[in-house]
Length: 451
Picture 1: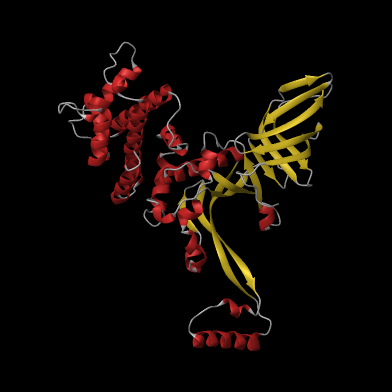
Picture 2 (picture 1 turned 180 degrees about the vertical axis):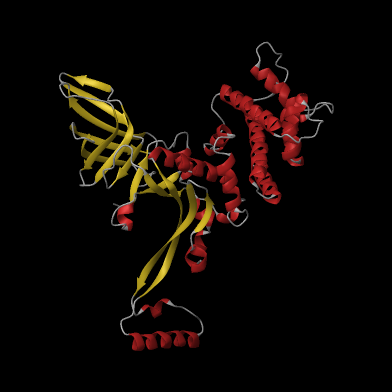
């Protein structure tokens, strides 16, 4: 079965049933990027219904499918003797029936912006074969993560010499003579030329994993890419790897859809936009991907997870309501405080009273500090940025505090302050990941220019 795209909408009629085939029913399987993944069906009231975590199906096109989810069989409507159901699907695997506790060998995935991140569009078809070998980025006792490349070719007929063009007729004649000689010596030879290269991430499980465990790894990877690109990255296509007796490539890799992918609040449209490799600050050419992904998988699976999810869902638009901006500000100051507590060898001058100053002093830089001072309207030399940020935080978080600073700021100014704090926290994590200081400075310069 061909790949399924998380950005497309799908609608299949089919026959669905419990894995033990104790109950069968007709239904409609619906996937829409912004609305999610659902199974709609009708059942007679007399039929025996029980919750299950896995359903099998045969779609109208003859394809088998396996659906995973918490199918509690909750009613959404009733008409005389007919019950209406709408169940959310977490994962769908297409092309095979597998059982609920099936363990898989791995998964292969493509992500938004990943092709341009790896290599500029105009150069991909000209990459040398030696550079297209699998690149192992991470491995431990459980998993191995690699970049793998697929080459796409187009066959040439034996009259393809006319496709060449040069202003030097002598060169053209020599090209023509070469291929004429090739035709004489080799007869009906076949030649194909590369038209494109597609890079994908492959996760191989040393110890086989269930579908929920593999999804957590996929989620960590698209959050990782989101964090590097400072854009919301999402999976586009995925193929799950199932071990089979005949070991054929087609049987081992089955297309799948995920129902958890969040495309709300403008993320869908932003994910469809294009980026230019030359405009990216972080690429495989500017950082050591193996080093930073290894650090990421070891440290950031849980640490700063909420902030990382924020960046992975960041669209650049200001929240509509002021309470959202205030909540975000309090959250970001909590991250600044967490950085303070997580740094054991900090200078003694950074006591608890100066806890917000620590990350600002070390990871902001002169340009960002100037922007923050202007936004916070600091006009006294004895007020540090850390102190001003703490005072504003206390006014927002504590009832009864005089609103001296809040009354001076508009919602948009507070949002811009939040963007500055985003940059500081991101710079800290970049540094901790092992991203070079020069790259971090370029990142800060680019993002400050947007404020």
